[in-house]
Picture 1 (cartoon, rainbow, N blue to C red):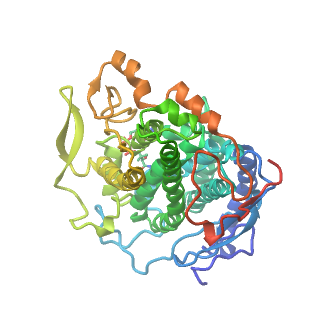
Picture 2: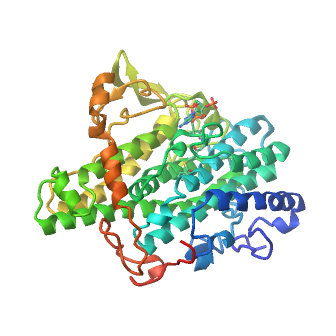
Picture 3: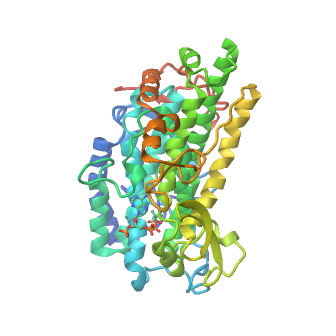
Length: 482
Ligand code: BYC
């Protein structure tokens, strides 16, 4: 069998030889109707009959793995796709370093592995649920299509984790697969597992910030899981990462286009002071300070997804060979971290300061540091657009202690520079740092749909190039039922 090619003959497209694995094939076919019901109930509201110009994976070869065509979303071919197996792959880190990678679940690590897979799986449908109302206010057909592309691929990422659960974890894997369809983002009794996935994505600026900041946590976590000694997890994450890149592209370019439109409008109107919020808003664009507040919000919520700075769970997962560091294979050390330290930012004697911690315990902190460095790159690109327009404003990521709910700083308040604030000061100044009701109401007012081919809402610039190199007047979504 050619592993790079995807078999589209059965109900479930795959490159894992599902046809020769009747038990797993039956289990997935049984799970399929529940998934479609979930998609119809909790996936994009409306547009289910619309024809959307989507990419579908036809191969796992990094060069040319997707084909583009018009698809009705419920008919999207969600499937199981693993990157090719590397012959003779060894466990790259931890106490089993150098042993053959596991092709079956190692019994002693079953529970830990299942937990990692379930948490990863839970985030995927959660994000679709968070974004389900956005279609009706899309700023263009181009953006509408990108939203739906992200949504169907998050759905596919759920399939990826469900395959692992069904194939390798027997009855409890089946139960977990069911539970993934039962939890709901933001639900009082059955919420999604991680905090940021229970927050609202109320508008398109939030969507772009979410795909920039939170999907980037996805990238970091998938990179760490792609190093896993459990080979099927490694292979599935490797392929997911190729899809994830587009989601972050949507976020990065989305924010860039919002920033660009604001700067253009300010320049046209002769407004040079970015703090003149009222005048800028009158132009029908989003003022830069409000964009900054949205970034503060999504960045800080996303940092919580890295867990506690000092974590026994993370140490155990690394030691066991299940979850590595960001791009472990490119790092030059012993890959075991039995000795050695890592500087961790902590709250010591009421002050935020660095303290060296055993490297094994500090893995969440390290991944978070790698994340912050990665997240800063795109921020630099946004600032380049602002400076090209000669506007004196710079978007900055807030201090990592700002607005946190998990870890060292969960019980304190700080300003954007990490200076501690009393509860009363925080309450008074909160609206300086995070979107206020007024900011939210202003943005909501701007969110009017623009479904005319080739047109864009007032607050966002067109993209520089189309998807699949399509021209500016391409009809990315043929709306049937909006
Ligand atoms: N919310 O040792 P600790 C993505 C819990 S995004 C609620 O600090 P650990 C995507 C934790 O469960 C990537 N609870 O943390 C993006 C534990 O509870 P138990 C998703 C939290 O385990 C956009 C306790 O606190 N993938 O793909 O080292 C769109 C102490 O735990 C939170 C993954 O996250 C929280 N934020 O690290 C679509 C990878 N943080 O077990 C998709 C898999 C911690 O003691 N997950 N807790 O009851 C992991 O690697 C780890 O579980 C975490 C947490 C990094 C999440």
